[in-house]
Image (cartoon, rainbow, N blue to C red; front, side):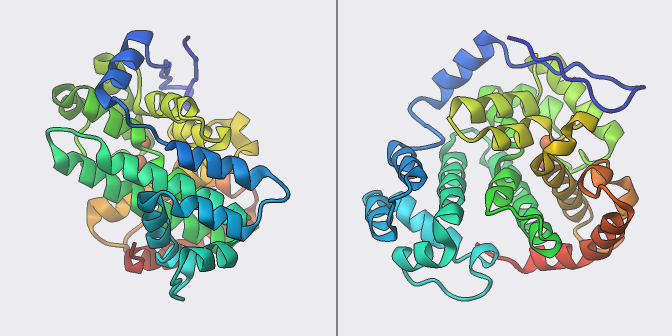
Length: 304
Ligand SMILES: [Fe+2]
Ligand SMILES: [Fe+2]
């Protein structure tokens, strides 16, 4: 099954293909029993959909999985969710955040622990990519809040997992991964993005976007998250009705700048290839550009 997706540049088009069946089987064999959503998390997500779902029942279910419960409480207490007010218990977290936010907290916590469990010989690669995902998540959350975009935590999860395909490539073949991915946080500019995607295509027969997007779909996560992972480097005019893709792409570019320069200063928003996809009017564009330094500065101070 090959999904053809052209990049928005007319002059430098790259056909992006889904991972082959062989790659998918190889990956699933490598990661073994690991699943993005453990069965209890799936049950909890199902429970949230029911109109009669109560906070007490929901908390009791989550508490049956200590790892998930601890991880959720840890994330709930990150500045992104708690806004600085300590959340002492899971039940309090659920009642304060609401079931919708908790749904995204379950997905973020599960994805987080999956990423930390993936085994690879070069653990620094996983840590570098995790840091990049977490910074992107914090920036996406900050932009969501400042611009009142209306996301309920899914922007955090999308930022956290947007480059999961890169981690999966490192699991698949560490040697080829280091040839394709320089991990220099210089994937933000459009030309650099194309070079990275082309190297991945040559070595893996797919890109980190397609591999990650496929894995997110395979794991049963919402389609909007799979789209954010799949299209964060290949958005186009057809994506204007998918603001989560644009938000993730904008935040990714800002995170790359911060990690590459080790600073929040000197950022040129005009170089952000996704800016016009998130800010669809002049006034929104001006507001977004004005907010960027503040959001980047706050992202540095957030902790998990
Ligand atoms: Fe990426
Ligand atoms: Fe990225």
